[in-house]
Amino acid sequence: MLEIREIWKTFNPGTVNEKQALRGVSLTLRDGDFCTVIGGNGAGKSTMLNAVAGTWTVDGGSISIGGVDVTHLPEYKRAPYIGRVFQDPMLGTAPTMQILENLALAARRGQRRGLRWGVTREEKGTYQEMLKKLDLGLEDRLTSKVGLLSGGQRQALTLLMASLKKPKLLLLDEHTAALDPKTAAKVLELSDRIVAESGLTTMMVTHNMKDAIQHGNRLIMMYDGRIVIDVSGEEKKKLTVSQLLELFNKVSGSDEADDKLLLS
Amino acid sequence: MLSFINALPGAVSQGLIWGIMAIGVYITYKVLDIADLTVDGSFCTGAAVFVMLFTTGTGLWPAMLAAVGAGMAAGLVTGLLHTFCGIPAILAGILTQLGLWSVNLAIMGMKSTVAINVTTSDMLDKLLVSLRFVQDVAKGTRPFYRHPILVVGLFSLALIGVLYWFFGTELGCSLRATGSNQSMARAQGINTDFIKVLGLMVSNGLVALSGALLAQFNSASEINMGRGAIVIGLAAVIIGQVLFGRIFRNFALKMLAVSIGAILYYIVIQAVLAMGLNANYLKLLSAAVVALFLSVPYWKGKYVHGPLKTGWAAKTGGVQKAGGAQHA
Image (cartoon, rainbow over all chains, first blue to last red):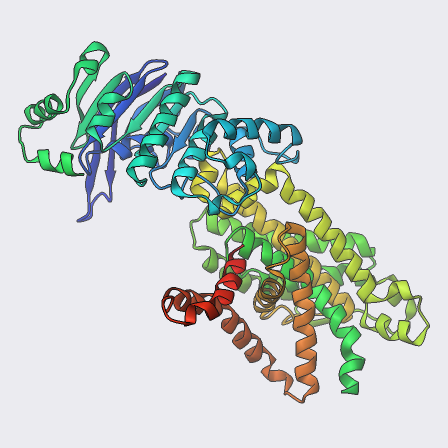
């Protein structure tokens, strides 16, 4: 479903702030894979996700989604294939627009937008049903501005929006990092449910090793712009946090990263 | 006082005409979140194109349509400078505005003023609005339905209706989404660059239309007529918001509030002039008023968070609410 081949990215080349964020990353996800991505700060997790989403183009290598080469497509042209939830709850929704309007925008993701109505009457009922399932009381607030919602409510809404029109690939970029533990757990549970319901191919970046082990069928760890650990299937099911740390120390050749990974 | 009352119908008509420009400013400044300074140039472009075509025999409506087209072209230039060339929006607008000064002069045949000959009635009767109609209706020599307040008022309502419909369509919704949150818009597959160019074109089309109407009202196009238009537009937007922000939640009503804001602005200007202010100080006055109103939300933000625990809190409660309405 997703094929990343040898992608490279350097930020601010030729300046003192030069940073090689991705150094030849390759990754293939099969249809229905749920892959968690961990790594320390600056390891390249979010950079890889942004490369796939098309926030900017990569310096080298290629990316294809469902057989379509998207390497040189701008962000908005990749949108038909990708559903996204960002780390910052502010980024995924339009705060000055209604819940209803946000959902209607998401329902038309990747479609031509013309002079038909932006929200139809039939849609309203469908969305109300969907919001009821979220169990956040949003079904009675269809016409409220999204700016009035809490961070957790917004992330839940963004998740719903990202999956409303079934994407080929769902990208979750530390989408629970800005939430309190209780809300984070709820949003994570909701993510699991949505992924399972539609069998979405998913990549989830997280800082939390336990979450990375508990969720999904595959786990990759990044270090210094490269994928250094890749476990899946039975092997991943048996993985523990301490094993994962040990594995990481072996690969990176140091143990200074322990604290960085555990504390972040 | 008497002169003020006599001048009132003219001031209201003029306010209504500038109100159409202010709605254009509202679309860029409030909906798209871009401060577009093209306005100062494209206003006169609309007037110049209209007057040149109309005085050489083109019909009223084709000439107005051409004016709108010219305004949209100006918006297109600013849009491309901003999106395709990566120039910050404010600077892109300033560049277009500066360039338009020469373009406008060229359109007017290198003359700073081109008048519409309204001494004979055959030309005058063809106009949609004119200051003379205000007097004629008062004297009874022209039917009441030609009164500029009625004509421009209905014209504005029709425009608001069309814009209300447009912002309810998929395309209009993408425009609002782009102004609200660009990263969200792009994640939904919206080409935000295209949308920004489109918004700037629609906005400057309205601004040019307003210019074409003012040229008719004053029976002339003048190279400096658009100078400071952006400030008048902002003043109208802010006055409308301050007065009606809490009661007008619907999008169409918000545009109506902008139009009313422009009328009030011109009534105030007329009052100040009637009190004997030298007209040359008007621009300074406008700038000061707009600067004051733009700083109010900032000051409010500073005060409302500070002394909450003191007895002050009860009193500032009302202020806080007004601040909230401003953001809506």
